[in-house]
Length: 316
Ligand code: BDR
Ligand code: CA
Image 1: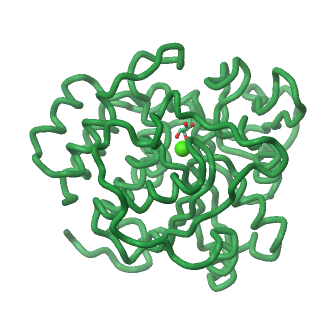
Image 2: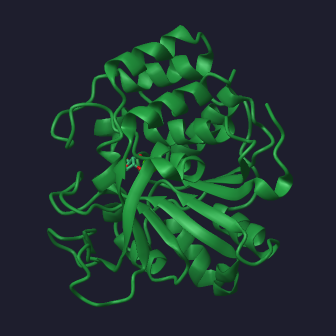
């Protein structure tokens, strides 16, 4: 693969709760080292409890053969709410269909929040892109414990929220619903945010032909992704296929030209009740408040999966 100058690589940290779509996002990042300098993976409770999301991050890292990227275990539960998990979607271990063995490698020492703070402290201003793919608990802890690291954050490109209907409740998308207080802290942090919510990720579904093509490549990573996206998935989740929610975050870093959105003001509902975790997005600028996120709403899905699956084919 052609070596790019060091300056052209974007320094990133992926905060994640794997989950099948998290796993695809991680694999895409591992396969894109020419463009992305993945400094650390931090785990959080979300799709499954944090012991399992951490094991899953290690399983995916083992598959990619990228042991040099440390995996730090993070928050056990949301800031205020009780933890809600999603085994009914992801399966009992969070990676149903992957066929991955138990981890062969070990977690790095130190809590994810401490690792995040240390990494940001050591970084130049405006240099680190944070990529949260789960509940925003770790980021909220870091920003509250060490607000002086905020200027180090170049941008936050996250999966979460919805312009319209939610998926875990009628009003809310899963990641924001699980820890709405953390989400409110992150959306209020003052750093540039790109939000890839259900408005775009429910459109990120591969065609049957593209999914079938995963088996033609013969490598283990593509076979693993094929197993995950062809597993039976419960109904009522807002789409008939397997949306690649979290993979959209890494794809956005690599190929922003495939996406379109708008700068908007958005507010997170933190109260208990049916609106908990709703992201109210002022798409039409009615409130005349300054934008706090670039909200992505469109993706060229066919091109996205052509590029994504070609990248996966470069892995072991
Ligand atoms: C989000 O929720 C999780 O189940 C997925 O991994 C994704 O991050 C989609 O709502
Ligand atoms: Ca996730």
